[in-house]
View 1 (cartoon, rainbow, N blue to C red):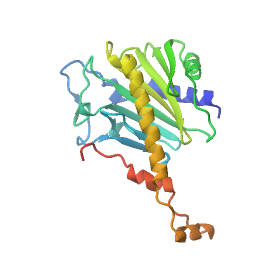
View 2: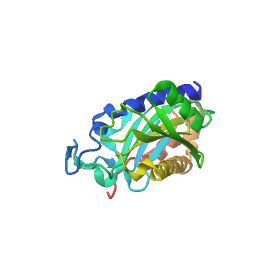
View 3: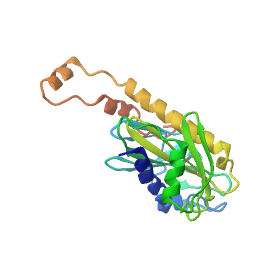
Length: 247
C-alpha cells in the first residue's frame, strides 16, 4: 500500500476521533467536572503497539489515557493529555488544555517518511472543508496546521495541528487539539508534537536494542524447527509496559 493511501486511511479515523466520549468531553467550561470511569490509575507514560514493535512515549508533562487506548490487528489509537488532567475525574478547562491523539497503522518496512505536502494533499482529498493555514517540516517531522469546521472535539478550536511519522513499520498520524487562544495552536503545539515524535523514536529504539539476546538453547530449538524463542521486541516491550506515573 502506497504512503498516500495510508495517509488517507489514517486521516479519517482522526477526523472521527472526536466522536469518542473522551474527546467529546475534553474541553469543559471552567469548573465543570467530567466523570471519568475507572479507579484513577488510567494514566501511563507509554503505549505499546504491534507486539512491542512500537513504543509510543508521552512528551514531558503528558500522559496516555489508558482507558481510551484501542488496539487492532494492524495498529490502534491512543489519546494523551496533561497528566494532572487525567484521573478519577478528568478535567480540561477552556483556555489552558491540550490533547494529542495518535492513530497507528502498519506499513511496509521500506515505506518512506511522509512529507508536509503529502499531508496537505491527504486532507485536501478527504475533507473539502479543511483549510491549510501552514505547512512545515521541523526536524524531519512534517506538520500541517489546519482549520477544519465541523470536527467533533467539542470545545476545541477549529484550528489544530496534524503530523505524521514512520517508525519500525508503523505510520503514526498525530492530531493536536486545543481551545481558542491556547499557545498550543502556535509554536508550542508544533514543539510538543516534535517532542512526542522524538520520545517515541527513542523509546522504540531503546526497546529494540536493550532486549536480551536469545540463549544458545533457544537458538538451537529454533534451528531445529521447535517452538521459537519469544521475539526480542516482545521481551523489550515488557520493560516498557504502560505504567502509572509516580507508581
